[in-house]
Each structure stands twice: as C-alpha cells, then as structure tokens.
Length: 296
Image (spheres, rainbow, N blue to C red):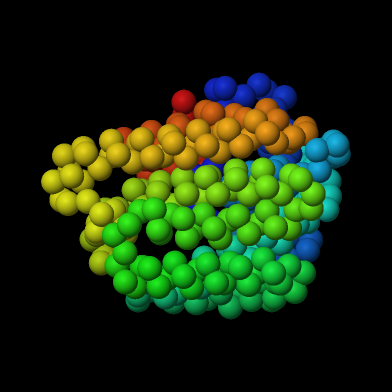
C-alpha cells in the first residue's frame, strides 16, 4: 500500500497513542509469525488502520510486553494475535503482492528489477495468504487488471480510476460477517478513493518526469496544474471523500479503536492531504510523522 493513513499525534491522547503503537507492533509480529520475517517489511500505517476496522468490537486488545529485535531488543508492547489481526495480516500480504506485481508492469530499468526481486521473495508468503482468502485474492487481482486497463488507455477520468482502486479495498469488507460488512465497505471505499487521489498528487512530478501514467496529467491542463486550479479541486474532492468516510464511521462500532480510528478520519487524513497539496509530504517522510508529531 502507500502509508498515508496515519493518526495526527497532537490530537491523540497518550494512552491511545500507546494503544495504536501496540496494534502496529502486534500486526508486525503476526505477519512475521504467519507469513515469514520478510513480510514484516511490508507493514505500514494503512494496514494498521485495516486491522482496527476489522477488529471484533466486543474484544478488547490484549497488550503484552516484548523485546523487539528490530530496535535493539528494546522493550515494547504489542497486541496479542486475534482472528482480526490474522485476517488483516493476510490481506496486507495479498495487497502488497499485487501492488508489487503492478509495479513490475509500470516501471523500467533498476526499479523494475527491484520489484521483480521483491515479488520473488514474497511469493511464498503470498501463496499462503491467498490460499486462506482466495475470494479476496481474486477480487484484488481483477481490480488491478481493470485499473491497469484504464491506465493503459490513458484514462482522463479521476472518478473512474479512483473508483476502480477503491473497489479493490472494499473487497476486504467481504471477509467480514454480519451487518458490519456494509459499514466497513463504505469506509474502505471512500478511504480508498482518498488514497488514490492523494497518491496521484504526491507522484505527479515524478510521473510526469519519468513518463508514467498519472490521471492528473490527463485530467488537467498544464495551466490548471501549475496555477492552483487543480489543487483546489483536489482539496474539495478529498474532503468530500473524507466526510463520507466519517459519516459511515459514525454508524460503525470500532470497539476499543474508536479513538485512533476517529483521529485518523477527522485529523490524520486532512493533515496528510494538506501536506501533500502544500508540497511538504516528501520532506516530512511518511513513517516518521507519527513519531515526531510534525503533522498537525
């Protein structure tokens, strides 16, 4: 995935920050135990958000201390593995694998080779996860194929491309049973649409320079891209998607994760969107933001 879905620490109480970190570490450990240590390199905040959404509402997080070998065996806390955590780990591996496969098709030269190597290293983990969730794997595969077709046609519609990507994420909701499925699907759809558009804006300059497809290059003229009109329209549609995700969230029951998920939707997403549109995102560097608290 992309790593844009993270909380704004300045608006999250200390105890909920600690709980969020415990979920992050718990998902990391679950991925390592179930799909091999190499899969832990795929972890990012987007997958933690998915794990919190899929969590059974009446099941509290069982936080336990451990020593993390990746930070000098420092003592940390992690949520113990649960069925929701195991499911999020499997879906994370599948999504990452197909993103890597898509990268092989999009890139050239050294980057293409790097994606091929990553695909080979991850193949065993992917096959195990795909065998556990074949319907989700099939939905992601088909979604990536449809998105690649739109990209190959140089589609100039933001709605069609963003909708296609959002549909890939909504497939995760189909692994949920009961009435929560519809609410989770709505949240994931609008968050997925938001991710696609933010990523397109974040990659605009590099895509244009390297000749890769980016819907913004075809949807807006050069004057609109450089004169601010494009960013104003993006700001509006990103806020609209965030508002619809928030409206769906108010119908959900996130259980122990109400605070972190609410923070992400109401503070984190607008903060990241603002950083991307203002050109600050690459400077702040994604995974360091939660640690430093520089996103506001």
